[in-house]
Amino acid sequence: MNEPVNPQADGHAMAGANAVENTESELGAIDRAKGPVAAAEYLPLLQSQYGNESAGQKVIPAAFQFLNNSMGGWRTGLHLLAGEPGSGKSSFALLNAAVAAQAGFPVLYMSFDVQAEFLVLKMLCQQAGLNSRDMLDGTLNEGVLSAAIAAQEETFSRIEVIEADPELPNESAVEMARQLIAESERDRALVIIDYLQIWAAGSRQFTEFRHEIAKLMTAMRHLALDLDSPLLAISSQNRMHQGEALLQSLEGTSDLEYSADSITFLVNVERPASQGSYTNPDDLITKSRSLSVNLRKNRFGETGSRMVKFLPATGAFDEETVRRPYPR
Image (cartoon, rainbow, N blue to C red; front, side, top):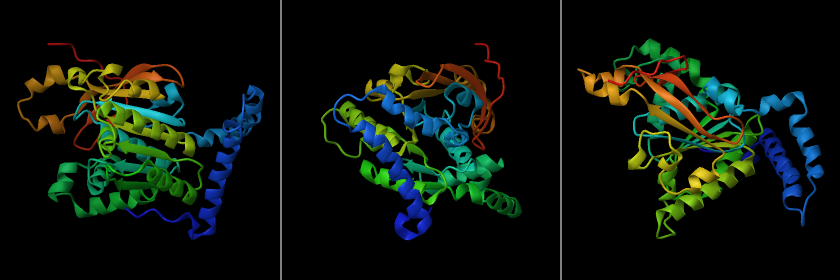
């Protein structure tokens, strides 16, 4: 992926940067005022942000209609995605990155775990319906691959994938996202963190890891609010409650539960019943399986669950009505 570009490079970038700064100054004039602020002083800001036809164009859509109906898309704030290993968290994040980019929004995908090349490969397979193993083995038809790359080039040009160092300062992440916004025609971006526990471990300032998590949560929340953008962070689960849609399963500290604006869990509902019955281990990779998308916290609306199908071979999801398998 290309390195972030200095927003001073051209007039268009400068205009975008000024737009972001103006938005911040308008918000800051209220937030930083001395003494109590009357609620009425916020009304002109609400009118300018939500009282016109362009308000809907500021919403970054989520990949599943269930989440769009429940939250109204990815709203400004901190959103957590949790699940056990292999539940499809990165695939979910990549799908949301592509959907946001298709809607014209810039995306900053910060990976602290997986190489950027592999993530882009997974996203290409996901969007084009290609088998990732065929890609990795070099057995995919060259013409098919070329056509898929050509079809996704415009969308992928809006997605910046960074192999981030765990010691990366939060200020650097803000600057990268700000530059992407300045270079785009939108006033916000979708920022994805993959994943937060690795980033938190990068700078050990405290004896207890939970304090590192709490510090990073505060920084990520400030990042989202400073940019007036949604931040989607992948989180691991503790071993005691892995594979369960429980708020106490989030690994690190209870600050995760209280600081986030939304918390979604991916649960492989077929795992207990089906994995032992597969005669071929490859079936775990090639066969689609049912996942439960569980919205357990939502400051923007109702919570709830939705069953989807997940195909690990391509990383694709199918949001359709899926019957939960009976226990065996």
